[in-house]
Amino acid sequence: MRILLTLISFIFINEASYSNSHFPITRDSTLIIARGKIIYESYCVSCHQVNLIGAENWTGLDEDGHRKAPPLNGKGHAWHHDDATLHNIIKYGLAKLVKNYEGKMLGFEDNLKDKDIDSVLSYMKSFWPNDVYQQQINLSK
Image 1 (spheres, rainbow, N blue to C red):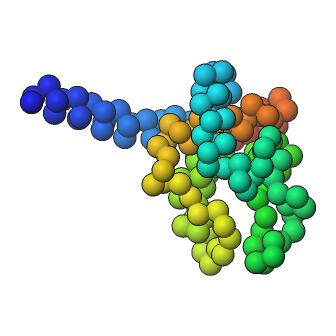
Image 2 (tube, one colour):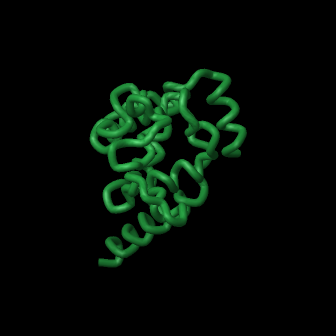
């Protein structure tokens, strides 16, 4: 029983410390990128499309009057944000971060752990040109 409690405490402490110390997210690990691709295809592809190209005419509004999903492949504006902001958008959704937001990016905190979100970010960054990637890394330090 004592070993089980120690293990549970270690996991909790490890996860809590991870959530505050894991930026910047890099694209250095092919394993993490592959994991991010699987998660992206499960949760993100329906709006942001295959190869992260975003919705067609993404700068416009959809039939409900909401902004369309932007590309995440370095051609949109995602790279203008630091990792903490991108992480929070995926985790909590814009509805919890932007007052009076009426869009469709609601967040995945009930479905994805911090490490899952970071894997998606690593996958996204694997599409970005080197100059875009370096600028965004500098924002996240």
